Length: 224
Image 1 (cartoon, rainbow, N blue to C red):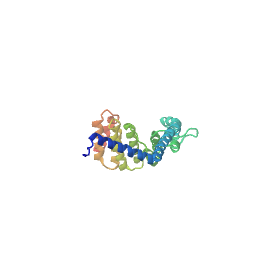
Image 2 (image 1 turned 120 degrees about the vertical axis):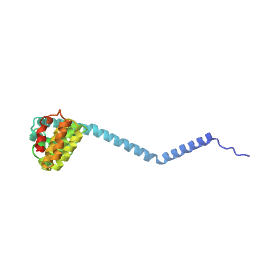
Image 3 (image 1 turned 180 degrees about the vertical axis):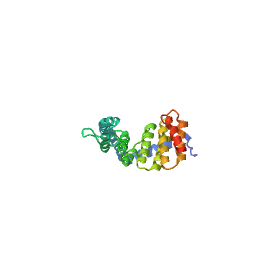
Image 4 (image 1 turned 135 degrees about the horizontal axis):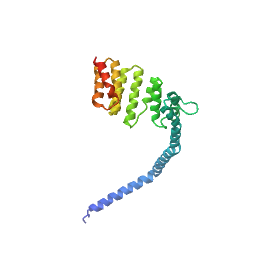
């Protein structure tokens, strides 16, 4: 008696049944482990959610509230008070020590500029290097401030590198100020040709900038 060959559909169904059977067997053997992993994932997710909602967010709000008076002092040019506080309100330094960046990454920028204005150039660099922003104007300004700190340290080569980076980052009217600073640092290095190129770039590329009004005197000085 001839053996009837299985149809393609019967073969397919048999494969499906075997797969289902193996899957059921796997779950029967490893069910506790699987449920344990799922429960662990849920617990971790709930812990993260709880941390963000009940700890991180209130901490950020508290940090921002503490930073508000310091920002006001900064805008008034009271850099020492803005940095150190006055005993009643916290300064940027203590806010950073207590909250890190929870008050916002701008805290590092503010603290860096305060240190820069107070002549503490190494401290200024330490803060400014920690600042980063998606806002290209602020990012370029922070890099240029690093250049100012290097000038204060008389490290003109590093200053030139910082100003170049700031110019490339800004690529707008603000870049004119950074080009002038780059030129002045290059003059300190004795590279008048490179300084002249910076000044001419201001004149040619940013004629509407404030710096362009006085740029001819810089050009004349290095051409002598």
